[in-house]
Length: 267
Image 1 (spheres, one colour):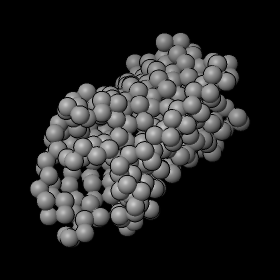
Image 2 (cartoon, rainbow, N blue to C red):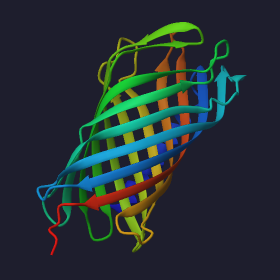
Image 3 (cartoon, rainbow, N blue to C red):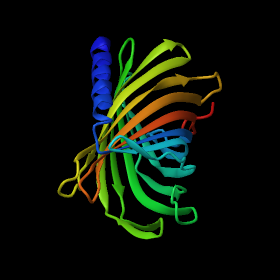
Image 4 (spheres, helix red, strand yellow):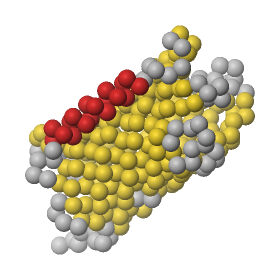
């Protein structure tokens, strides 16, 4: 099982790498992505709250059109996210667990790359609903995460132009494995695909692929975990001239996760 999963990850990484660079326009971005996550279980039946603040800061940007570099200016701090909503956790057995949390997720974009205008920003309102099923074996934890994600239509100005985005509904499917290598350290690997269910004619329904890798460290403080990792997002697009566009996002991630349980009865 472990060898099969690693083989699948290697194959998908190879396919992703080969696809990148074949488009008419290639965009490569490198970002630092930090997350603060707070989870609390409130009732014995499993209900609680989930909050998360995420910030992505661009450190490198490169745009090529037909192999010629057209833009290599960095974009600065370009996205902040807030996730907030109720949560529910259910253990079906000591090995099998469910987590779900419907969330309101506003996305704050900062358009620092506009060349003929002052730095601009806008907010995109979304509903974001992750559900995770996890199963613990003797030597690893297998997981499947489904995210239902609706991004509402948004109006904003970029480079002096008025832009309107359509309402979009997506699903994200993440297949992962977490392998303990020490009692306080896990290695985490997963593959995720994004499906755009409101795609117009000519748009890719399968429009993004993501490879996740990293470690989870429990430093010894009750309820605290630290996650370090790398994520490669490959997004497939098409512009008004029907040119293929590949956007490669290289994320170096840092997350602090703090979990509390208020449901336990005091002795």
